[in-house]
Amino acid sequence: MNSNANTDSSPDVLLIGAGIMSATLGILLKELQSDTTIQLVERLEVPAAESTEAWNNAGTGHAAFCELNYTPEKPDGSVDASKAVKIAESFEMSRQFWSFLVDQGVLKSPPSFIRRTPHLSFVWGEKNVEYLKKRYDAMKVVPLFADMKFSTDRAELKEWMPLVMEGRDESQPVAATRMEIGTDVNFGSLTRAILDQLQTMEGVSLHYSEEVTGLHQEQDKRWRVDIHNRKSGQKRTVRAKFVFIGAGGGSLHLLQKSGIPEGKGFGGFPVSGIWLKCTNPAVIEKHSTKVYGKASVGAPPMSVPHLDTRVIDGKKELLFGPYAGFSTRFLKQGSLLDLPFSIRPSNILPMMAVGKDNIPLTMYLVNQVRQSPDDRMEALHEYYPEAKKEDWKLEVAGQRVQVIKKDPKKGGVLEFGTEVVSAADGSLAALLGASPGASTTLSIMVTLLEKCYKTEFNSPEWQAKLREMIPSFGQSLATDAALCERIRKETGEKLQLN
Image (cartoon, rainbow, N blue to C red; front, side, top):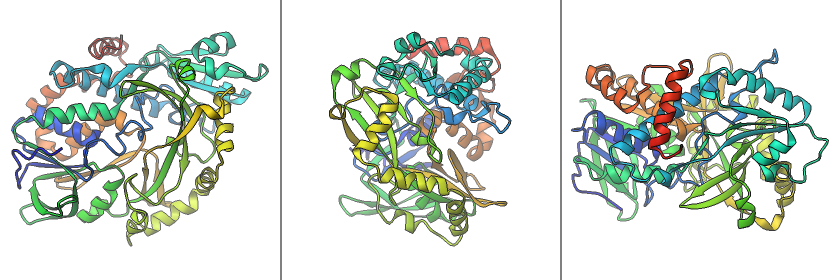
């Protein structure tokens, strides 16, 4: 699938990677400045086949409603909800932008990528029940979470999540929170719809089976990018004013190839994932929510266990996991040499410091890799006590590369999140990291534009267009209850969620 009409060897923008990040940035730039010329290159034969693909992506509608790792308990026992507030607000920005694209006719069928799916947090044990109540109290006062419900009533919990409660020890203290307006988002479907529209636009070309082999900034500040066609073996060169590296786990290597000083000191720690996928339609039918629990000690954020209803390619699915694993690949379809080849003199000390400071994470991953099928079922039974082994099969998820960066005090730290690294002159930017990733794409890309297109970003034309695309732009949904309610109602109607 190549769109080579309008191929330009000197585009304004080169997007590397055909995932949700590049698709969003591409359509944003065309809306803000319609004469922008764009080329997109993707090493695989189809778009959205790595982190963005539904089976690979752990982030389906992350709005911080149910993910307990975004609301840590502080040493004094209080709950810090600041990260959850930021993520929830970012997700609302995404909803507004998708609603705008529906109005523009870019996204023709909202149910093909977003559906209403309640988000629940579930815990057991006295201490965890106490924590969940404190979390609820801290979040309930923020307009973004005003509709959250909390319950310890077993009859009510059974209505909310029958599979989770059936066969559970009656003496076990349990509690859950529920956000009715949670959603399930298929980012693969969303990305393909945006790219389908992009390739019809003047000055845009999409190229698949093409891999970037080198990039170098020339004296005129344009980037010379060497590209190799993995099918034909042909080579070509593009000279772009601005380069965005949105290649998921592949971004670190390309950032290192660019040689920008801002990229020095960054490393990557790959974490793989495995799902248990339900094969029994009767069981799948009984569960219609996303139920998240507390992560094990040392577990990375993308390994927070959840019993997860999804709709993938029009079919309802039920997953449990993800179980973490370790591979030296940075991409699911990458090379086992990805990790060793990423080590540089500038990042070896941060990587060693992270290894020393994250022994619990290392032990957790070792134990996960050694798990037997019975071990995996034991974990599932904590969330679904009556699960039968014959109803579940393994499904391999995507690769995540967590960011390692220099730290003046510790030498290096492991960042659980996303990081935009940009050149001082704004001519190149790379996105590193994982969760919450896809759900906050729009917020991440607006921040990137502010960094890399400073003059245009602050112009009255761009500011007005941004407010048209994101009606809450420049305002706070976290403090303005009336605005939050109005925006949610409008986007809910346009996205067919109400």
